Image 1 (cartoon, chains in turn green, red):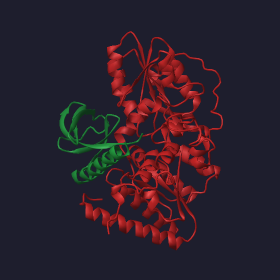
Image 2 (image 1 turned 90 degrees about the horizontal axis):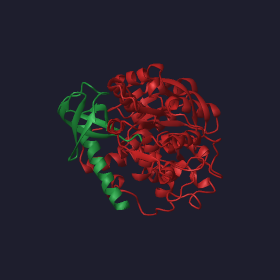
Image 3 (image 1 turned 120 degrees about the horizontal axis):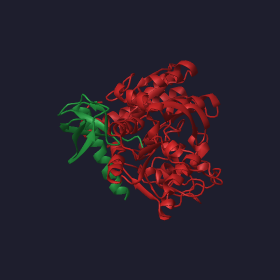
Image 4 (image 1 turned 180 degrees about the vertical axis):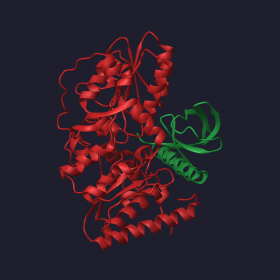
Length: 76
Length: 378
């Protein structure tokens, strides 16, 4: 339940932001990380950005998540 | 850890596994590390880390699955609330199938209860706005990672003066449960793998008592294969050198202080109070109640329900599994009566429950080598 996934901030709309998660976009709240900016990466839990992280680390996390998805597909 | 190519990743994994084996050999005695977080439990199995560990190193799961530690009393109360005709109960997906004393939310739904599953608590506000004639109750389950998102949602409801929204706060705080676990002396633990995303919010500091008062080292660890291996290696390094500190492996996200903004929301909306845990019973200051300023959003005040005395599931040992005192395989119901399809206790229901993880990935049942990330090519 404490899973959090990284996304890239595309646009900021007040206390909300549009984030991109490996191809899909979703609006999330930035109320818990209000100073995050466009182009930065954040990890998202339950629709809220919990913390920022740098691009390299986000790439690393996304690569691992893609693998997990591939594994889930194998698990059926 | 940097973004690296596949080869570098594999080399690093191999090096860490070697280091873990060397340190375990040097220690030369049985070592027990408890991973506190349910997300870690699953990741350790899924990435094949458990299978790669030395024989004298045992990983046990702790009280880190929010759904699992929610006692029947709270589940029963939520079900009664949901069965009220004017109520829409909103919660996270994990909660729906968890059996209470007599039924689950899923059973209540068959009886006609309006129960909706959301990804974010903010969606509950959309439901409240769209249904002004109904009472929207959000069943808030989760640790410090999740509680700020629900706190911010309550704050938003307050600023909109939403009159038909309230929260049943069943949130739990991890450090008090860890204290209870260590004080009981029931399980001997040489080191703790600490929950990475709980610490994203509260920082590493609230866990320092483990090292300072009890001399047990801890490592705030991330969730990817290399994080897990590095976290274990760093913990073994402390144990082998008789050091005990709370260190952070997951530095790309976690700091000593945590997310101040999230902490401010918690302080504003909630007040720590006694909470009842499956596996521990009542623990002082281990839960989050709504603070007086926000009491109009407290579902326990708003929606009056009476529940019959809670009853435990016969033969279910989730209580001991949650404390790390029993392996799922040692429960008589495990895999025979209790399966993910027909779960008896919450540890088999939640995808992050210890029993569900052992059922899905347990070595004996999955003899095939697990997962590419750690497969080290010759």
